[in-house]
Image (cartoon, rainbow over all chains, first blue to last red; front, side, top):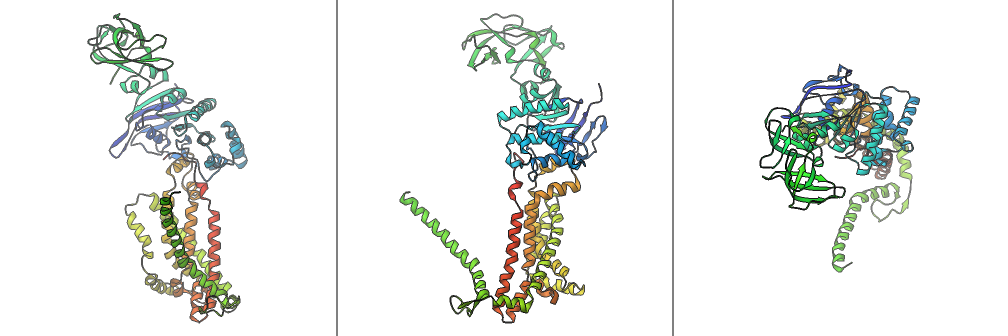
Length: 350
Length: 275
């Protein structure tokens, strides 16, 4: 694999006694779209700011195309950034905002005009060149923000929760636009969000962050289907956790009729936690225990339109969430068998 | 509208009316007196209105005390004092607003100190030093003395202006490649313009209206309007003094209007979202 465009290596950062980043390492390949996904306070914005150089890491290094840029000041890093707050200059028009980074780079007036016009066309705001930011809607302002971050062809595009100040409809529209534009330009992008849907829709790879660490990196599919920790599983989509005891390739849940095939989960034996998505569970009427067939009782059944949501009790107070096609409805308190496809079970750590 | 509602509304209106009357009495009436004195003949406060109206006091003011020269002195000294005041206040306010200075309250106290003591107490000292340096009866000397009065207000106004410059915009500018001089001249100062204009107005008016310091430093070439007004009263020409006062008002007003037109505060809102 070639040298990554951007590498973060063992970066640490504390504020007072609070460790915001604890030994974070991540690499972004040229042209890749990586998202840092995590709840607020997980350190993703702090990581972004160490990448721009606005914060200096206490330890570790940042590399661009193999070159150590840890000590390079922000204004010399040639990065583009889209801000949650839009951060447009209120005293400049749209065209003035777009020309600002160009004039800093000594681009001639005539070339500035050409590139501003081109950038405005890219985000479909040609008619608003002479408007001031306050005269624009949130979505328009953020499109200016995107155009301004791209107009000087930065080596990396950073996007810090760019959609969270927009209403739902505008959010989806702009998300598509970001996806389209970044892919068309082939620009290396790092995106920060707490929204799983945004992360999945945009990214080649997602790095899930929690408490100042990256807990798992992978494609959206890998992260969704094979979360490595309970945090990742719970943060992304709906999930069930089953405390089991594994012995001889078979996992059993205490006090529950039926077993789970654990031969593909590997060693060691002993107690562990298994994870399964509610949607992967198939419900069958009646008690029919066996391998990957667990008997349970329907505690609650809720009609959700395109599906039914069930709460199932496996005995001993252990509950599972299940989802099923609304064509067949299992009544409350009826006994059903939850069929669990073997490939859909993952062993996770707490 | 119920009776109770009416009863509750009326006292409020009465209060407003009373305040308006007081405002007129305290602020507007003195100006009216000056106008009557400047434009009136045969008045001397003995009648309700002057018996005749005249422009002769203005004629006198222009002929006998060379008002154009006095006006020019006043304006030049005011503009110099404004320049000096901004040159000191801009960096001082920036440092106090943006750097985490340990002695911040003490610094602000020191900056304000000259305005907390009577002008005459330091005016004598300033005059003594300036005479020794031959700075008396010079534009620069008097303007420098006025900075003592102008800078404290300017620094205060500019501190809050710089504190109001959004750090997120500075971060954005620096990611885009701006630093040092370009950050200051292309981002910070343009956004601080309303505050800078306010500081300039305060500085100019502090100098323009100053009497005590100027009185101790002026000479034949540097008489200013307030000093000339005083001299005319001393010579018994109260009506000429009134005419000079009216002349004194005109540039003040023009300056204020011009400055307020330059500033468009609405241009400095928007472009940011969220707290």
